Image (cartoon, rainbow, N blue to C red; front, side, top):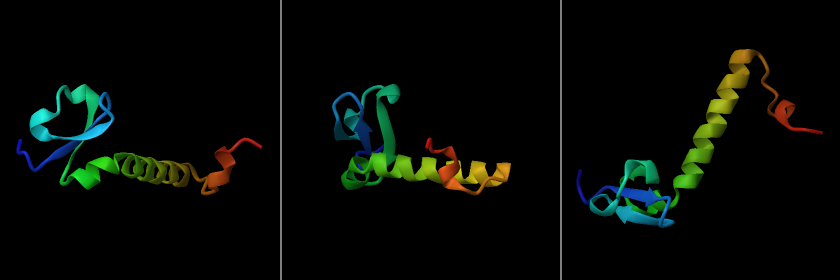
Amino acid sequence: MTDEQWYWSLTAGAAVRASERGSADDVMGPYGSRAEAERWKERVEARNQSWDEADRAWEGDDDPEADEPG
C-alpha cells in the first residue's frame, strides 16, 4: 500500500490517502489519484450499467427500457 493510492471514504464522504483509509468495509478503491476517487460513483454506475446490458444480452433481451415501469 502506497500513499499514492486514494480511496473514497463512505463514512467521511471524502477522498482519503491509502494511509488514512480505515476499514475496507467503509471505502471504495483504490484509485490512482484523488480526482479518480472523487468520481467513484460515476465509475460504479457505468460499470453497473455495462453489467446490466450484458445480462440483458445474455438473456436475449437487448431492450434497456424493458426493465422500466410504465
